[in-house]
Image (cartoon, rainbow, N blue to C red; front, side):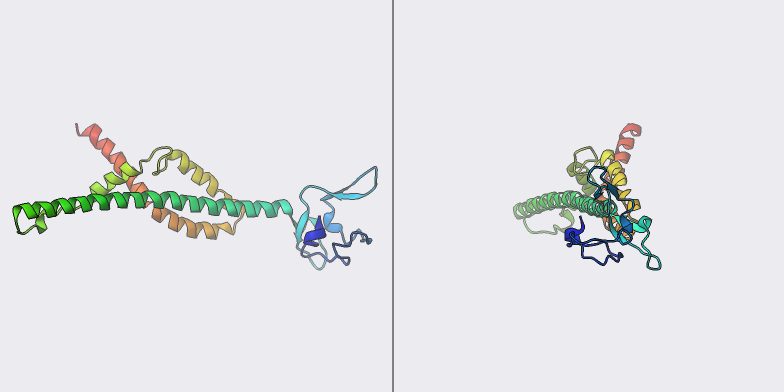
Length: 214
């Protein structure tokens, strides 16, 4: 196990890990107390389960309970990777509908501008500044809801995805240092979620208006 990676940090083993042919005192291997067992047939000691990869000695004495196992190390790496990939995927799935909506709005505004230019050529020169079509905020919100509706499998997300977001964010509890990364990531993430949240609120009030304004 330790032949390639060496002895765990914090241990003081006098024999190199790649010299398995030499005798090592059981006292020096005390950090393996909870990670080893003796084979009754051959009498050899084997390592199983979550073996230590880093120890924190106190006054030169290594306590097996103060060692970090390979399972804990793997859990930290997995949680960090999972959280960063979740943030990256969230940013991607928020930025794409924003870009799609802006491209659609720009195409419609360019089309309206061409129509105004053609109309001005037919009617002759005049003050056309007041006739220029403008894109209102309500129109933009309606376009957001059209391009990225709040439904499962759509660009706008859904309650299922939002619940998974909370469940995945629970990984920060596993590794407390992730709270700092999570804080910075959520600042960026929730700033990007403003268009989606605005679209959800717009759809909600639009439904209320349809129901009560009849």
